[in-house]
Image (cartoon, rainbow, N blue to C red):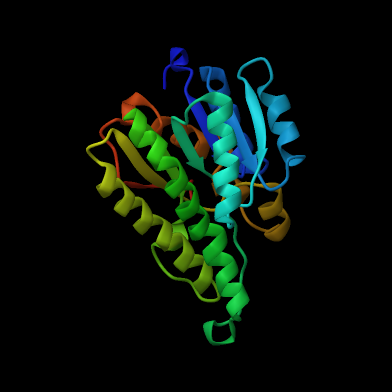
Length: 237
């Protein structure tokens, strides 16, 4: 992405560690940032970090609720006039019990958080991208999507769904100058992960800034011939 592009970048989960890093990576390029999160207060630090480099506005959204998604992205379009890039950063992980002991609510929680959220946002954003004849979407899957792990079935399945959604959407829009890709992070170096795994070698994990660099690349003209890809970003692990 070139500094002169002034592209409008919508970032879900913008108040989290990775969402904040993605916003910071786009800000020096002169992008207009639409920061979407359930917690508007969490976006305050993100806006402060981007101050002086990019215009940024926060929008409250529940990504699981289609009406909330429709309303929030409608406000983004009213505010900025278009959405050039959608970075679907929102998501999460919980370790679970064995599959036979997994409750419906725990299965639904992971599938909604990681897959339905992507379905809802892409369904809302693609039509205006089609109208303009341009768009870039970057989704976040996970390394765990490629091989199931014990006590992680809902998470692995939800992230595998993100890869398949990405591939299907890319196939549907490949001739419309709308490129859709996803990244597969390994363990991300966040304060939460350090707290949960204090004995791990943090140096082998993936810094949020490194993932943000890949998101910016996939949104750039340099990646204009890449669509439907699942890009591994594993760090040294």
